[in-house]
Image (tube, rainbow, N blue to C red):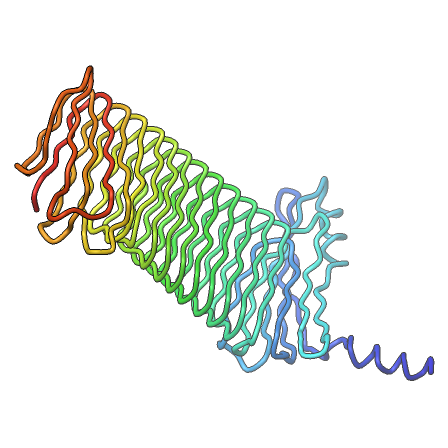
Length: 375
């Protein structure tokens, strides 16, 4: 039984036969460097453990080709040489997964890999930039600190870095990326996208599903989203061009624009809010700033618009019926003769059905003018 267990373990964990070589040491001012390169068979999946920058090109080689540039700074050239002479990479097979390990310690190792198209890849590095492309399945990247660049991934993608910009090209599945500080830029994601940064701008051009974008301080710009959008910023402009669902926005300080959506829920500490082509219910408020709302479609539900200091302008098409209840401390200007306007104590009030009536539209202004306009 012991012999059987031993054979099973050996079948699971196998040191792959590989051809490796080294280029001689070069040293200057106490810093030494050497280059290790080689080849090994590649399984269908790959796991990389590193302590420095990693570059992966999937679909660039029928086998695993690697180049590792190793450097170390020491108190003396002799000490640096001793560290590098002991250094070696390790390539191991665990079932269908190839595990490539570039050890750390005082050594910094820049890893470059060329592989076949992999069905799944995991990359973990304690510190350094990561670039990965050409993965047929899911990709996971975790870096202690450094920028991440990813493209040509057909599966789901999870990207985490302690700090650095994240740049994403084409993703065939869902995307979840997080950075401690840095910008996030996304070109195309077929699934949903979760984008988080403690400080930096977020830009996502196209997603096939819902979008959740959060930044501690920076702007958010969403192009086209195939589902609802949730966007939060500690301070910066938020723009959502088109969402196939309800847009929910929280902005501590900064303007908000929603160009087309099935509804809007927006809360801003300060900054103007501009919403157009809204076919669903709206609940929009800002402590200081003007609001411009353009209604669209027959699915408009009960809506609420309010500002503590600024004008509110509502454009109402002739095919959209609403029941208006508007209150303002200064004045209300209406292009609809059927709307009754009166003064009640310190407030100006306008109430009545427009275009035959419909969902309730409540408007509250404190330090500006309410404009009700035909479109």
